[in-house]
Length: 251
Ligand code: GLN
Image (tube, rainbow, N blue to C red):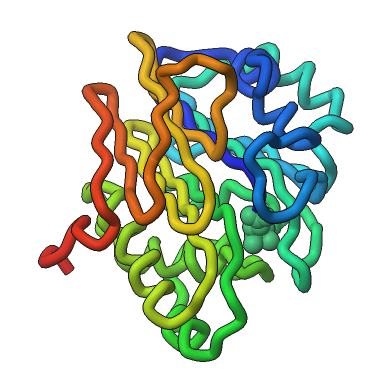
């Protein structure tokens, strides 16, 4: 189980976001507090962020532990963004540790991250290997998370919210495979994430909202997202709904 994080709000420096808090993602890479599967997240990391000057999100990904990349820590001091997705990776056994496997994945306006593992199940594989969405290179990455991303991109229609597509992917995956499906997505203006098999939290402060595998500090305002639920957030508010209820009837 990797650890992932999304932020939406007033622009923040990437260094403040990823290295600043006492239990920041950087610390979670070597000393996670709530990680039930695996121990350290040393098999790569990735950060994606939105910039007003670019239509698609930008990314920095490496196939090494975040704690070993001091050049990134320096560069992160001068990058600011109002919407960020980041992940530190503990590779699922059977999959490689090259840079292309480091999430977040990117497609259209999306950044996407999967914490968990897909149980090796033919029924799910058949369902998820329908034709790949065109123009989404990360859908071809050789890791179990990529078919989930591909399926989310397949179900989503431009302009629609992210939550129904994520919830539908989790429902379909759970129907045929006992895996863990904590999915996280952003589009620059909205965040959505599922809790399905591992921990998930959210926090709203006056200037922004966070969604993370585990809290970044001991603020009692961190809210646990119950398993089987979807959290969605935009600049106006946060909602938590049951995955089984989300988007039913819309597709
Ligand atoms: N299965 C994904 C991978 O191999 C995510 C792993 C995880 O959550 N530890 O990258």
